Length: 354
Image (cartoon, rainbow, N blue to C red; front, side, top):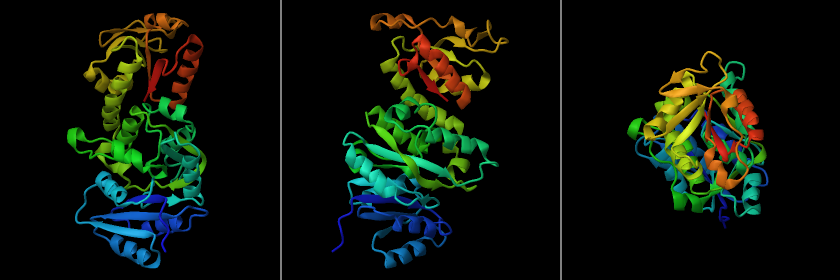
């Protein structure tokens, strides 16, 4: 008798015949994994994807193919795969990535051990050329530095702190809060990032196991490279929606902030928040050429103008709330390190965005 699965691996597939066999084999060869199934959705492919899926299903009943009549997009194809699943845990996987040995076992064990943990991801191994793509490699290095629920939550407005095909989560959260949403309206948005922001806003705790769980490949046609929904402007738009709500709940002087970063790119990233109603009372910068100028109606101040934040809770509203809005990871960490002894900690007196 077939064992009842504890993990449903949701895998959307579109024109993935070239990479799909390796992805499936990496899952089917998982070591020490609890019973699992692979719900693989062919999202209207025009290549040999469906034949690859059915051939694997004929050899291993854990592969459960589903065919959509037309290309609905990654969000809806993923949701179709999840809806077809029968297990209490959902693991995500893309058809062009590789699951490393022990991935499913370790992530399931982490969820088993902590009932308060809603999602567990893992470290990722860069499957591209770190020399040719240093920015992407640096992003992965940053991702792999965020492991604890606190670090993931505090950095969620910088960039997406999770790699979608590395996650495993409880099915009941998907049923309660919904999965990926279509990203075509309003110029599009990265559907996985929106999902994590929405879930964290609802209080879902997320962590990572401290080992690599997937090889994250970086082919030229990956959606994050070619789809406008993953462009920087799209990230800024969806980030602004959730950061605005977060500021309303956590900034005693909302909607007023001091924005650290007065350059053109910093102001461009800030524009969607300003459109929501954010008021920049002052800019902070270390560039002596900017200090003393007026930018968009606000004075540019030296960092020394930031006052010590009072220790008494009732007095903290007199201090400015600092929005650290710089693009460089190294500079961001230096700024946060400078602010900390002055009483400004991420989530308490300041927040970082990117």
